[in-house]
Each structure stands twice: as structure tokens, then as C-alpha cells.
Image (tube, rainbow, N blue to C red; front, side, top):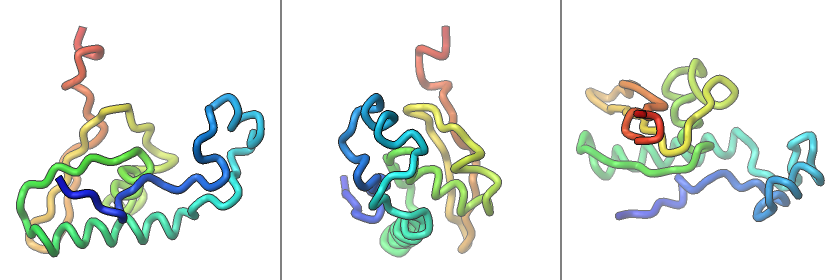
Amino acid sequence: MIEMMELLERDYGDAEGLTNEVRIKIYPDKIYPNQEDRSSLSKRVMSGLQRIVEDFGESKILLVAHGAVINVILANLSNGEIGSGKTKLMNACISSINFHQEEWKIDNYNQISHLSCYNN
């Protein structure tokens, strides 16, 4: 297991560590002072994805990340068709992306068939 700083969840600034109830009360507009901006988040995450390619080539990799990171990856690889504001990722969902011949491809995303609570 390798932890990568580039793939840490978005820094939500002054809203970090607050419960949903408190956060909504203090920041009803969802604008959190000192929050990492989307551009910085995107640059950081995509540099981490590039580092994975450089270090591991076309090897199979399991990347576990929080929603904002996954949304950034999906948005970048789909030219904005998927991701933040367009896709509500389910908790514990699986997305499959591939890097082959210098090109990224999204095979599927937001898959939940492996979760027993959705298979009843």
C-alpha cells in the first residue's frame, strides 16, 4: 500500500472537522473559507495520476480515494461529461479506468453491484 499526498481528499478549509449540522448552520451557502479551490485540487490529483503512470506503467492498480478526488479524475478524463456537478457518486462505488497506449479510458464508473444492500 502506498499513500500519495496528491490523492488526499480536498481540503475544505474552515469547514474541516465540522459535523454536517454545524457546517450547514455556519456555511449555508457551502462557501468555506480557506477551502482548496477546484483548479488546485485538479492539478494536484492529476499530477498524482501521472505519477502512478510513471511509476507503474500499465500495471493493474487499485486506487482508493474520497469522492472529490474520484470526481476530479472522472471529470478530467471525460472532458467534463462526468464528475463534480454531473455525477453523484455512491459511497463505496467502483470506477474502472485504464491507461493504454498513452491514453486514458473510463470503462465504467459509479458501479454498486458489489454492495449487498443494493442486491436484495
